[in-house]
Length: 66
Image 1 (cartoon, one colour):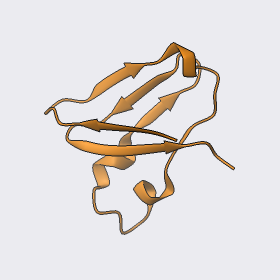
Image 2 (cartoon, helix red, strand yellow):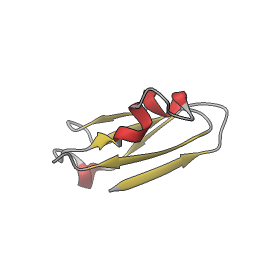
Image 3 (cartoon, one colour):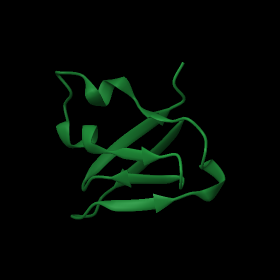
Image 4 (cartoon, helix red, strand yellow):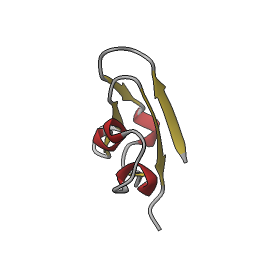
């Protein structure tokens, strides 16, 4: 599990090369129809580069898919 908090007004990309090629998915609660913060559902992870993109003013959790 990996979590991020972005308090800025702009989205940020965080590159963690040590996590590249690993499988991460946005926690299902962020994608649920009744999610409290719909912006969090826009967060992404690129396994090729180990880059997490976090929307502005959100807290997100990425999990290892099962």
